[in-house]
Image 1 (tube, rainbow, N blue to C red):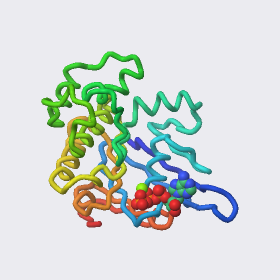
Image 2: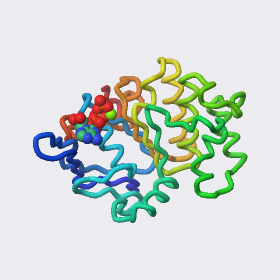
Image 3: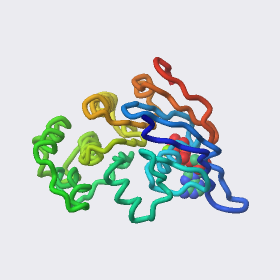
Image 4: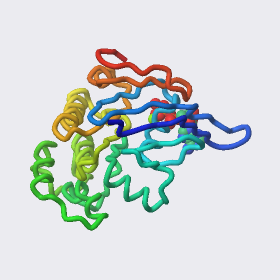
Length: 229
Ligand SMILES: Nc1ncnc2c1ncn2[C@@H]1O[C@H](COP(=O)(O)OP(=O)(O)OP(=O)(O)O)[C@@H](O)[C@H]1O
Ligand SMILES: [Mg+2]
């Protein structure tokens, strides 16, 4: 089943002489349980694409369907709720709330929805992330790798169908980076989640089931299995 469908996505930033065509007619679909890497040079449109898939921005034209739902056909508020429940977003810059503890940061999407967190699942997640001894710490008391793991925990708290990650290993050393990728792969296997990850890291791309290559706003390659970045 296609969980994500991008249909003729275009994104233009700015106007007049400063206008940038960041995405040019990008179409593809992703099946439930796929682990997809997005690669391409700086400025090729990777983050723009991920933001549109995640409902964080609006396409200039074209559509995004998540589980068949037209994401940008939803009203702003409906889209925010839909996004929180279906999509976990991992940013390169963690975006943790400094005054909340590790545990509170991870549970934030549920708390925002006034949902009772599934305590056993959250505890299991925190253990898997190796943050057991750090649950009451604030983000400022953690290493970069630990902060990134909290951000991953937050993205997985809702057990979202889709996890979108923009350079999740960009600020990590290779050991921590590998660990983050293993966690994302585990998510795909254990919870049959769909993961789309942007990365400059060859090791990440090598782990993916499928590679989407962007160049100058276009999707120029879509390859499955055993392809190296
Ligand atoms: N908010 C914005 N306003 C204007 N132009 C933008 C904006 N965001 C991105 N762009 C432009 O759109 C193009 C694509 O940017 P994008 O961030 O998607 O690239 P990227 O592939 O993620 O690059 P990187 O690997 O450096 O993160 C670039 O030319 C960029 O300058
Ligand atoms: Mg980017």
